[in-house]
Length: 121
Image 1 (spheres, helix red, strand yellow):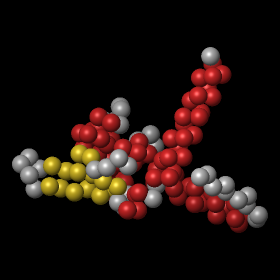
Image 2 (cartoon, helix red, strand yellow):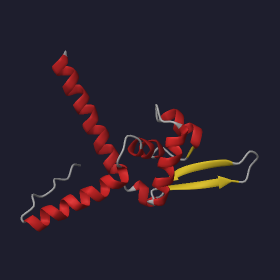
Image 3 (spheres, helix red, strand yellow):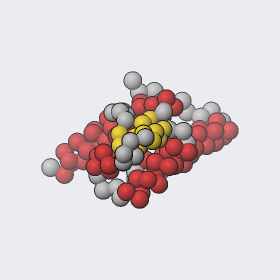
Image 4 (tube, helix red, strand yellow):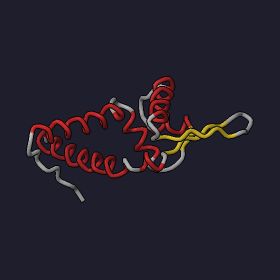
């Protein structure tokens, strides 16, 4: 179910809405973070699993993005005492609150792709 954002009734409300959007974008900004979260929505993953799923990301960039997501309490990193050491990543309960955002982006992306292909075809 899509929720409509009510139009701002005053300058202060508009500024407040834009500030909240900016805060969200600061955390999710970039090419990779939303894709990483989208991968983790399907469950716990090891580093290499995510790297295979998030097409084109380098290990250095994946490591950097995972650290930032962990700092922002969206991803939990668990080190298992195995030989060799294995590390798993999963969404925190807080990270799972982005599920509907990812679903909406997916739905919009599918519609957009169809629209553009139809116009070109």
